[in-house]
Image (cartoon, rainbow, N blue to C red; front, side):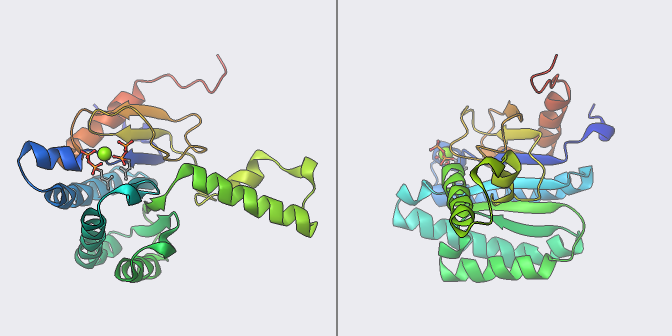
Length: 236
Ligand code: IPE
Ligand code: IPE
Ligand code: MG
């Protein structure tokens, strides 16, 4: 049983396995991405009901541009459809949408929907739903390094003053607590450039299930596994 008093405040998810889910069914990869969007809808709902404060999902990495043009444009078309269909319900459920990553570089239609979902839900006080899009942990750290360098040049910051907090404040996740739990689906056991800085002390749960099959019950199983872990943060 899941302990409702120890729900992680912040859960990160690497939603992996859409392509293999489709291949197993002899379907095109985009059918997998479409099924993945449906899974996401249910996970967002359950996470919000469970009282998760921040849900961060890895939707498109800085490395995913290596994929075929057709797959990339298909993914962003599905994103547009997802927002058009779900924004009203997200808003009704008091969910606040936030984007992590260089999302301004995304195709115009997707960008428009993302801005709309941010503005529409800006004053909501329920779960914050962070969508990592055109996100890369290394790119995020480079961006922070540049911002700190600019402050140094300007003279508003001295070298010896640079602290962990200075770095954290210049990440996309500024103000968001580090994820206690990171889940990756599809049996792959790697971070693939997701939340590199923020995951320093995260617990990792790996599920064998492909993302489209990751049900709310699977989410609860992952939380249960997390609740069985002893977190030490270097202490004893
Ligand atoms: C995750 O599923 C979705 C994105 C990276 C956009 P994949 O598309 O990586 O699916 P697999 O790993 O090929 O099965
Ligand atoms: C990570 O999955 C990125 C997202 C889920 C958006 P990938 O499928 O791109 O990662 P690798 O290539 O297997 O490491
Ligand atoms: Mg993958």
